[in-house]
Structures are given as structure tokens and as C-alpha cells.
Length: 291
Image 1 (cartoon, rainbow, N blue to C red):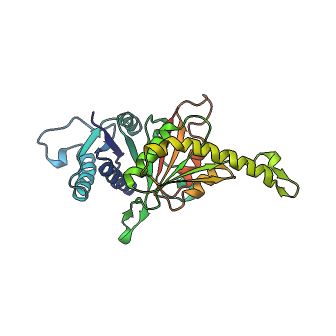
Image 2 (cartoon, rainbow, N blue to C red; image 1 turned 90 degrees about the horizontal axis):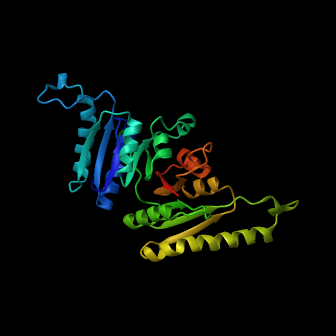
Image 3 (cartoon, rainbow, N blue to C red; image 1 turned 135 degrees about the horizontal axis):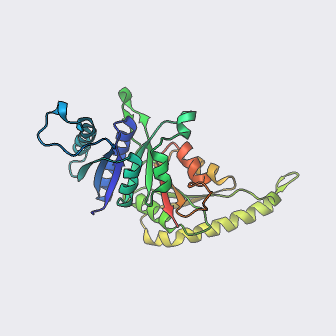
């Protein structure tokens, strides 16, 4: 199958905003955009049946309306619609395995909604073998959902222990496609011995910071050589990694975080930084699985 960007459509404003973002990204990367709508009750495609008798009418309408709008915005973009008679979560997971990335809409930032992103989004993020992007919507003029752009560049959260090539490859490739800077962020919580009765021990923190900067520079070095046209900055925060990453994402066009494919059986599928990112970052968040 040719490389595609897949977006899940359910008829909501959030999924349409995700489709707009996905169309922009597919065009930048010169990929086909696949509009996927899944519902277990879809029936085999009827032939020459009046609309009032077509059981798939509303499902087809969701895809067709989105396709018409996106094709008008991107006349040269290859767009395909896909109706799947399956549970949406399983259909998206199957599609994500065949996609360069999967894009899903995400609800607003109200306290409850920001935690429960939906019965579909979070399982797909947690189980997909390929990158998944969650796109939040703002509100444009006349109540129209607005779609985040590329302004603010790309921010990537770097752990510095364990391999992160997949994470950095996605981040550098995205920054190159967007023509924007990349900011690599690492947060490190200070150990107990860095704290003294009078405050923080400057000598200890300086040693920790110097070590982290060297490791960050080593991790970024090969990728700077592969993508010489990408302007790269690094940022170190001596605080909770989750706080450092969410803070750095303010005003960004995209935040990229990692998710380990293989975690202990009882461990959550998303680590604390990824959880903080998908619940609290206001920009689109790409979750990239890696070894």
C-alpha cells in the first residue's frame, strides 16, 4: 500500500479539525490522505439505492463532506475515503499499522474533558505501532473550529536514557517538512542530595546540568548532520520532566513525545511525560512509539 496519513472521522468538529491538520501534513509530506470512518453497523455497499433507503447514507456523508472541503483546499492532494464495518478503535489500530501517522481529534481543556480524551483516542495512542497525533481545536471566527498551524515550530521531549532514534527521526523530519526550528527539551528532577538547608546546592546542580547538556548534545549530534537545514535548539529544565515539557510546548506548533512499545505488564502504556502532554499541552501532540 502507498504511504498514507490516516485521519479518523466521526462527524464531530474535533475530527474535522484533525482532518484539516492531517491534510496540511499529507500535502507537506507528499502523501495520500485517507479519511476513515468506522462503525460496526455499516452494511455492504448497495447499488443504485435511493438515499432514504441507504443505511450507510450518514456515514458516507461524513466522509464525502470532509473530502469535498479538503479537496477544495488542497486540489493537488490525493484523498481517499474509507468506510469500515468495524469497531472504531480496532479499525484505527489496523489502519495505523499501514500509515505514516494517524491523526485524531481531541476535546477541549475543561478539567473532565482534558482527562477523558475519549474511548477511542487514548487506546489508539497507547497501542499503535506508528505515530499518532492528537489535534485540539480552538475557535475561529463565527464559531468555526480553527486548526493549529506550524508557527512556533516543533518541540520534542528527549529522555536521554535508552534509544530514541524513532522519536528524533520523526521530529527532525517534521521540522524539515515544516521549515521551522526544532527545540529539544529535557527535564531532570533534582536528587535529594542537591537540596541543602539553605536551598539548592549550586555545585551539585551545575554538575547535573553539565552532564545532561553533554548527553543531549550527543543524542542530537547525528541528527543535526542528517538534517543540516533544520535549526536546532536545546533546552534543559532542572524540574519534573513532565513540567519542563509542557512548559516548553507553550506556543509550539507541535509537541512530540515518546512511548515505549514494550513496558512491564502492570505498568501504564503511557509514561508520565506522555500523559502530561496529551492532557495538558494546548498544541497538537504526536506520540511516537519506540523501542
